[in-house]
Image: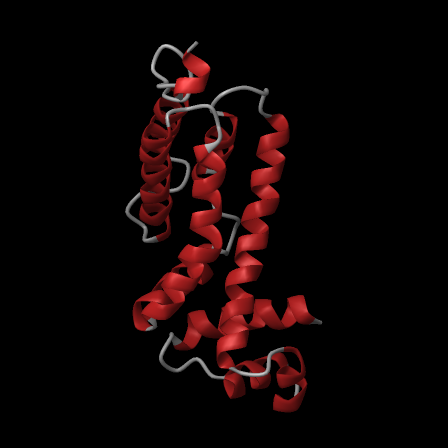
Length: 186
């Protein structure tokens, strides 16, 4: 039930926009009472936080899948991260991701929460990935910029340019391009 409510909330957010997004609108679309919705999400902020968590969980599932496919060694985590960001967005999900990006523009505090919960965690993981931490941060930022460009529609899904960009970033995680941390250079 909770996952269905979150899917419906994403659909409502996309349809009505960030400023008109309310619990009433979600309850009506989900065909549940407002009390039923409040049982799962006590207020708008809790619902929004759960929506971000829902999207983040899907991201983490993909990241884990790509991590399992990577061979152990320096750059493994950042390669998986790059691959997740360059993977085609699931059919029909781009409007919802775009709506969440819009929501962070309307309510900047959400961006800080998302950054703290998601981005800082990933940043810590790649700092201990065997690559020079600053170099890994550059690769992560490039991957993030690509993802945002894809969500905003600047970069078409499945384009040859996107494939070349992904391949170049992945190559930068391996010799001779990769810059390794001091511990791994010896």
